[in-house]
Length: 327
Image 1 (tube, rainbow, N blue to C red):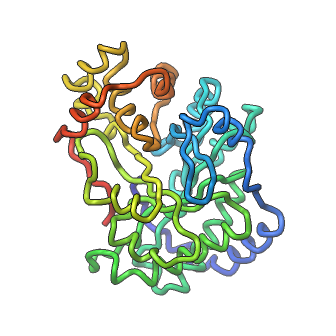
Image 2 (image 1 turned 90 degrees about the vertical axis):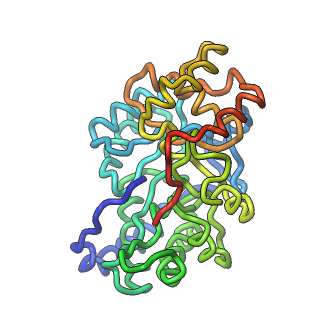
């Protein structure tokens, strides 16, 4: 999801953050197996296997733009309705609310948790500074959440004077080194990226631990392979995950003629059709709803299937517009 402005205050905190990271290293570890895997083993059609063997539920509840209390409410309701994958981020400033809901649910260990580390923006001057910054933020994430299954780099380095990722590869590789160390220390079960275009992914083509996921904006109206991101992910063995699968609430998808006419054939909503276009092709989605009615619709993806012709109709749609990667 979209990035927030980098806070200069983090620069002077590098040594403290690194110390915290080292302390957490000895205390915080996760198993390669998880209770969430039990759900996936029992419901293989509701999950996807990542390139490191970890099983990830296809439907996640996203919490972008939710404050802590609102996120807590949304997550608490979603877990009761059957969600077992929750998506948050350091930049969302709501991880405490997410964790409160997980604690209260009594099933926290059964829930797959995704969170994110901000990308290294232009105010971080060097690869080493980016590495240290990332280690500090990871420590904050580990402190905020009792367990992390998936840790993503939220976005590639952003520099208004640089077009494309090639000039920023050293920064990206330094940040990825911090991610790899966290994974190798068994503090998270999988690592990946978000908003990465093919050129950005090329910067990570020779890393030791391959990204498992690339989470990007993707929805009906963007075609089968927007900007070549989907085919690049397939080439590298990376799972493409969709955020904003309804294009931030586009009327074209929720109440448009194409989605609603197909939905009427299955007694489903236009929004469900748009989500099903993704999940039926085994593309994970991060949905977003606070209303229990819509949450229940979002999780109802597995009792029905569309025809190949209907999937093709949706793939050929030209609206609404979307951009799958940054910059």
